[in-house]
Length: 231
Picture (tube, one colour):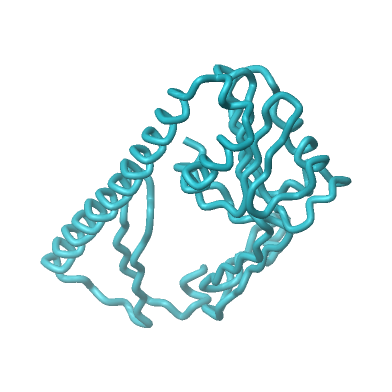
């Protein structure tokens, strides 16, 4: 029905698969039915596999590079004497390395009840509220791109998201990576909203009938934390 709405008589798609998941799709349409030559099908399948391998290699290379950087910084941090971690000047020196781990706008370090903040960060009172979202026990990180939802009464200012890394092995220190609010815009090839259609006694969703670009805007959030950042 969707293809009929679009006056499409024939369609041809090539999938890009990375780690057994659909990463992307090349789709082409024709107004009339159009048989595809077997040699073209074979070439398209080969092209899809080659592109998939290239994308997978690029993704893994980027992931491995980020992982090596994180391990290098983590090793330097773990080798520091615990008594030095309570000194503010240590964190002033370390902030550049730490903020290089992930794309972020600010950093806060909580040692006991004391907090040092660098870059774009809300007040210490608000930072304590943010840190309360992550339990003191364990080493499971907390991450959110919509802090206002978790802390509706907090004075977050332009801070929209945070990732909190509890370091139980270092006396309960918490590293808080902060991201500012960001208006995101996604351009869709048609509205994702579907019309509700009555078909006799049955309700079904009607597919869209236009390729007109639909722009989705999101406010009140930071840039989402990627799976690689969390890992």
